[in-house]
Image (cartoon, rainbow, N blue to C red; front, side, top):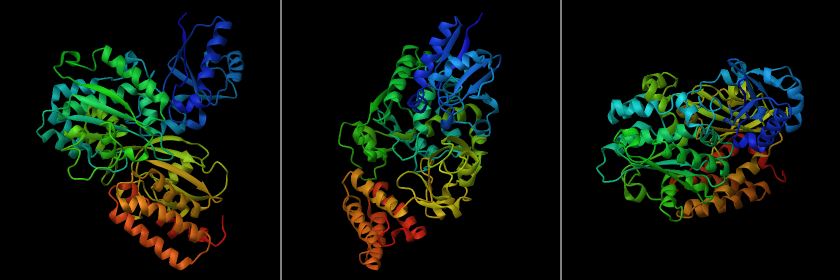
Length: 514
């Protein structure tokens, strides 16, 4: 009798709540019952609130069981786990879970579906088909498809990817590089991590396609130092791909050379800024560079460099396979395609939701997230990381669209959405933004280095009720200076959360309120 496949995620979220122990308990229970099973370590589907989510393949269906603990395993076997038996933890077929099937899975379509470190499973699910198509159609066709798709940088800046790639391709140089920015440090964000852990070969293919398109034979992945499990998974995947001839010289006899080096960061938030990341990759202190020259002209080691975020790159293989026009048909206005929105903070159903641009915050927070975890009224939502503006409950119907958010003084950034209920003190959140900037500033420019420190002091005086009108005006003036004169987005965007609190939650600065 064939072994029954049981899927247990190896994703960090699942592991943090006991997935490894659950996998061990399943193996022990099967052995005790002489049951033939095969444990498959897949990525997480993104329904983090259901982890560890165990699936069993019954016929052609994968039956899911949510929030499984090791102590649940004997009872699950007694209830007929291997046949998809009824149990209080049973969720039903994965392809009927509304949270998952109502998404627009373009970039994350393999995450959760496949065994993340199985090259055979990857190849069986369109793996390296886009790279092979790129070889057939040529570099110009790849760049044209990316340009036609309207894909913009998913790391936060939203710069058109096709323009960046074309610039690098057209710049004469004896060496070019691809630099994948995986230094995911924004609060409430985890999409890069989920993709690298759930579909590492997909990212490898994406870097190779980028390299082929622009004429680069070397790629770097700059990985956040806190992602220890991601580092292990990516390292194994890169070694496997290289051993199988999908990295290195003359890949699969194509005449194309490309290899990848995995670089672990040193814990600096500012290295998420592309030029600071390049400095760190070169072995220097992670300090922001002056621009111009742009990295596309003089980047890593002074050579033309494509710098893209993990999700940006991982969106490309399907664009090559299915066509840029199909991607551009999703989304709204100049915000084309999909974004992996991440629901975090005080929310009932936290997780990842990949949807086309144009969905509203209300649909995400109430429809997918189920409202606040506390059950109390929502007070504020921060979108775009620690430098993103705080939005009010009255702004939840704002569509997720780059330009629509700019119009209300906000940004989408990396797609992180952090929810606060009515017990949150927003004056303290404004203070946190300034303090965060003071701690993480690279120190190169005065507005960021000194302005953030003075900002904490001014907010403390405001909260303490000291010369409120004078300090209010001083804080506004300080925000103007930081926004207009900072060298990079670290100092330039710190005023976003502060201004939004002054605009929408001024009452939280009331004298003596803590």
